[in-house]
Image 1 (cartoon, rainbow, N blue to C red):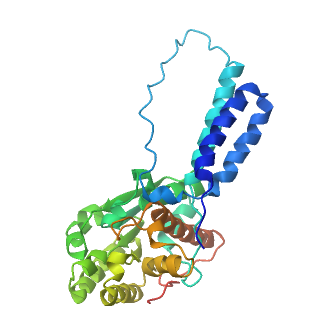
Image 2: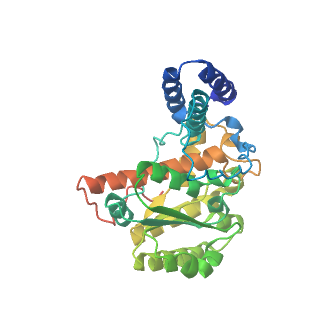
Image 3: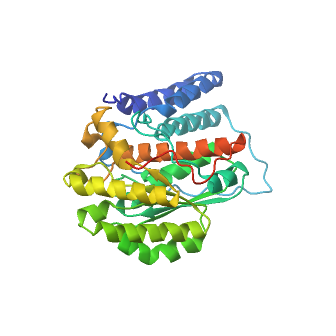
Length: 337
């Protein structure tokens, strides 16, 4: 099915109407409006998300501190009404928290056990996650930094665990694959002593016709070094997009190669290729609804769905730890393709 996004133009009109009404109506009606805004949290990003999104407002002047010796005036009715309008506006912006993204039915639905990061989140300890990869980790194709997958993942986890100290570091660099990534693995990943590493790799190896056996050696070596530092690992295979699928044998070979490494090293793997293929082939979502015009990189919706599925897997792993289901770290739900 193809998602419809009716709220895009209606949201602006509704918000203006709420602002007008709230200045005229009794304050008691405002919470109902705010509830309506919250109900829209699970609405879609518009299909136009692949074009540039509305840019954030310019920086607003800093508030002027009031004289401490002067009594603070009580806010009047108009001030209270304005505060309510701001709350409704904030609620309306929450539509970007999640998109209508369903777990593909034909693909396993978990990255497997993530015992290290899950145990720390369950215990309320600080957590550091590193997103390591190339341009789709860096966020090429997103309309704003907050719409990259690492930032969306961070926001999702912070909403789920509001009292936790969660850091998600973006270590993506466009154009790289295993040879270049291995040169910065120590300083940008291992030296940070992360609790979890999400390593997206293999797309540029397909596009550049790199030797698969050499890629396998480098990725396996990198995984072993990350494991030795104690972090959970999830590998992310290439995206299902026209620039990749025009090289079908290389793409399938890379997906299988990364699956074999994950099985050998007992780490998780997020099968991005199969997830995106199901979006198109089984959910009937047009390619250009989740891939930008270059035929390679994901758009805001694509990054959002990817982040949500990955975040949901982490949350499930934390839930298992909390109820006492301590799954061994070498048990994976995702299997090699």
